[in-house]
Image (cartoon, rainbow, N blue to C red; front, side, top):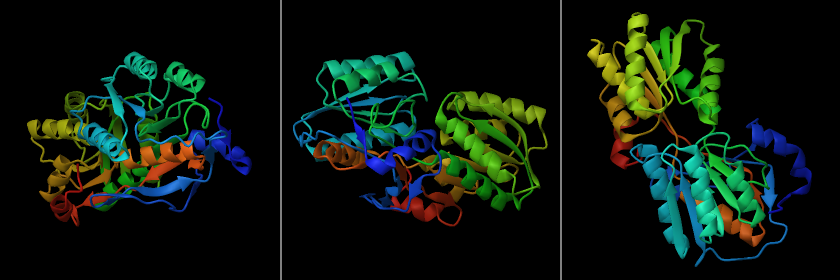
Length: 348
């Protein structure tokens, strides 16, 4: 597939691929329930040089999920894509789940291509490793939309857009929220996501950079919880033994936060009281914990990618410019809005 980047936008490709600052003000907005979806879009775009004007209605579309849907984020993400596929009237949505297996995700995508998918939506597991599958899609002129995590490749060749959150800014917002919760005085342990993907890297860096504004806040230790409640519980147990003076925790994901909270309780510490907690995702369980005083704040990661994914594919087939990056609008849950947010049904 040979895609064309709109003239003057070419210089922005590298910045877009690296996640540099390249965003313009919000120019698109859709809603799903109570949540506005798009916050910002990139100025760099991809435009189909030979639009077929094919309709999504009646088309076979593939969706490659990367992780087990026991994770509420992944479940909400999948539900959004499936609902949007039904709204678009696709003939068939081919669905696969790699269950945290990189090789399986490559094979899944190749299988969907073999089954006749004319467009693909992919939630990459890691920042690298999908190139063989993306190359097959390109060879058959199949447009690919990546959602949530970015993956290695060339915009407008390997994929037409990435729809996700600004993970660096999420880390910054988490640091600010933790500073507010601790009056800028904290001994922090950080439970990081699995190493090797853009989410963990950017959430780590954003938090560390923003923390420089608060001289009274120190990271005592940081370890990966591998996006797992069980792993995070084990890691937190070790960190509490090594650092009994900890009074704050920053976690990269709610699922890990739940495991870490169990470790706190088993070690005689009260979550939200003895240890201030700021986390990322926006799941019902943690928003409820905030309402109950067992956590301080949660930076939402908006999983409602479905409508935007199908809009991008429709625009591509129609020859309309598609922003290379769509940044989701993410909410911040804290004690001032947690109860009302639960009543509205916003947390997933």
